[in-house]
Image (cartoon, rainbow, N blue to C red; front, side, top):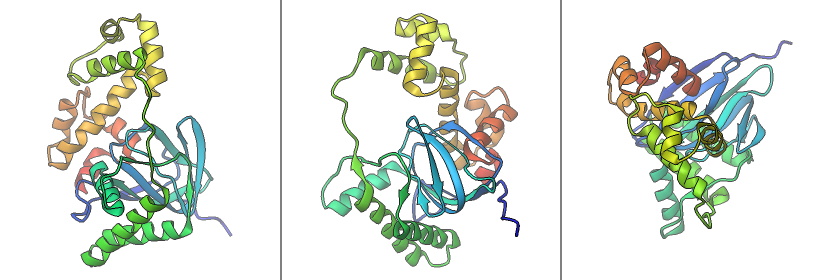
Length: 275
């Protein structure tokens, strides 16, 4: 009997029950996600197959039933861990929603929830997350869907959320990296050279490139493109034409924008916007 092989297919969608969130129902076999981050909590549940990903300097495999949480702003990849590929359901839950829910659970304000690296293997949690996701996607019983969503997310928080450790000091290198990031994002449509950000940070181009890559996990040009993609989501949601978003985000043309967008989200921007 031949094992089922998944195809590269993704459906992005949204629901008023989780404002500001993006949700995806997808399966992948050949697509590989380049290193990227999301401004939201990435909350997936693997429903079939297995996904491999690199996160915080280590490689992980999330099998069927696994919940590989990614914290906001943290660099990660994604690709098949077995020949067949994988299928999953994902909630990209806004930071403010998760933060407020954590406070409601505790009955008082809480620090920003944070999750340890690695795959959560909890069959009950996986079932709750998949059930909530299916009800949200069906959209025919909002009351049941919202209850299931709050049940799943509160279970995740109650069982696995921690507080992020606070750095004891701000190193001079952190300040220099922040200066370089500010220079890179001040005007995303303006050309910026390595010499420009090096000069702003008081470093040589060689040392600037090395320090930035060590701190950000990717070279300056790749990091800048990630920021461009994140900032493009708002206008796309608002219905701004893809060509205009591409130009306003600083990409040389629509094909350049589409290529980078697809590597991060698994679908071209027009399809993502259509959700």
